[in-house]
Image: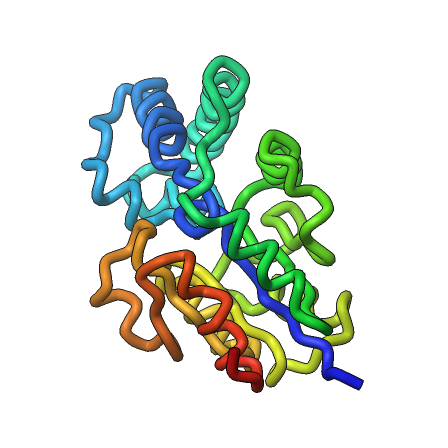
Amino acid sequence: MTARRLAIFDVDGTLIDSQAHIAGAMEAAFAAEGLPVPAHAEVLGVVGLSLPLALGALAPDAPAERLDRMVEAYRQAFFSLRVGQAASPLFPGAVEALDALLAVDGMELGIATGKSRRGLDAILASHELGGHFATRQVSDDHPSKPHPSMVLAALAETGVAPERAVMIGDTEFDMEMGRAAGVRTLAVAWGYHPAERLGAADAVVERFADLPRAVLALVGETA
């Protein structure tokens, strides 16, 4: 019998290009407190962290009460943007890569994201991907990346051994989380962290078309 395997995906910067919504919501959060908006590169640099940690990194001198208000302002702005505009687009080739992996005997897919469950459910529904993922781990239930909690929960939920699992993401937080959980790590080059921040990944792919083969190579079977 084929050993079960698990490919765990980050969402923002890996499956979807959500930077326009993230940047818009971050601008609203800072403007609500009369603070200067961070540069776009700084905003992308904290994508992947839970929202309180991301805002804390961008506004390190803000007291806790102000950060709490900014978190709420961000959430309200992001929700308004998501409702008022088209959903953040999938990166080209994402659906084809997911379908190719699901066609592999014994392969399951999961998600580990800094998004809330409400946000993740909305994205999956908008792209009709709800049935693709056997496990969905979100920020509502876990410490922020790079803590390994989300990956460990995905392994427990699916019953897949760590050596048969891979964490796929675009940030150093994804890579650190995967390593801390004892799984392999696969970085994508089209996301929000530059290549120099992804150097510790077990492998890097430049195109979604190359992702299924790279996943299979990392979890014990060549394509």
